[in-house]
Image (tube, rainbow, N blue to C red):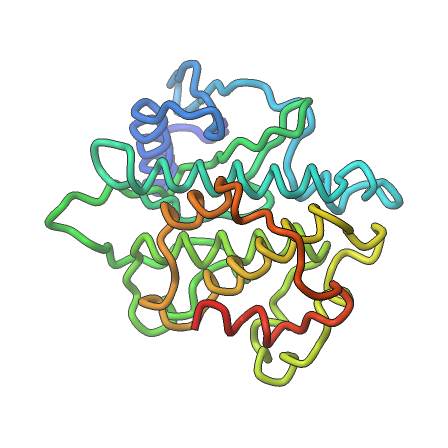
Length: 264
């Protein structure tokens, strides 16, 4: 990252650089982008990251028309798993809890093996044990938790919401904003009609994995932050063998309401 300005560097850019440097220096996880070094000279800031050959997840998912089959269901499942483990690490395994809080497809990079790397920590915050939130709204439209509109307080549950949106988007192949804003009206829709139509419907064990992921993602996007699961729980569920069960009913008969009711 570089900021091409002279002596009048916006304070926001300076703080973003410092936050990114401070945060990434502490984090060591295979699904979090590695920071190799940083440099500041004549008003320009530079951060040197590991190279992610395939670029952003947004570019891969949307960028090349007709290439959605590159991201098959198995690959999408592994990407969602990796993102969940990255966020869980930030929330639970660092010396201080780290809230991102700008988790979007653009801020997830893929290496040549489609392993996801969470990036862009410019607005990340470290939460100490005596500070459960901070009062500044930051993030990307369509991924921010709805409570931010009136509480102006960012907590780790905001990251949980953003993860849910991203997970749904990966499975659907389009942003789930319209679905989430009218979930009560769309609840009778069949899951098969919401999944990415550029791919054949998943079957067998993959169908069970996709259903499990959509179920967890819907729980993460609850409008009530207290009802959202922790990322530790989500990452654990996605890792458990028992999560990947064969469906007890055909995929074609499963509705969104049925999935949403599992965690209510």
